[in-house]
Image (tube, rainbow, N blue to C red; front, side, top):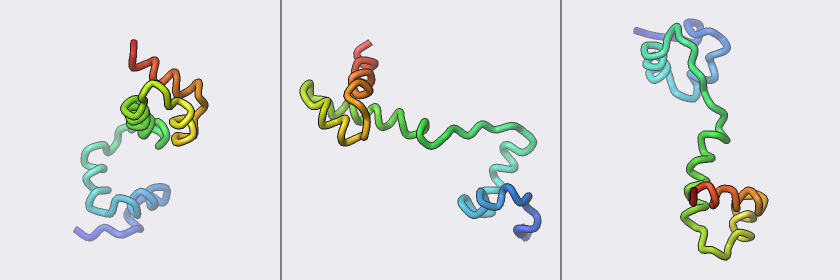
Length: 85
């Protein structure tokens, strides 16, 4: 089966360019006709970032972590405190 760009709705051309035709067809098979929520990138990577902050925290480096991850000291403290709960 030969799928071309003309076979794909215009608003999905970027998705096809990113994932390729084969994977696009797999997505269509799995999710076709349904509403799929795709979270914003920031939310997807936030969990991993928070785990890394907790792993790197040594009890005295909140300032360094806030600079490294471009967060306020209060944000870093909340992330660390959420792990302690």
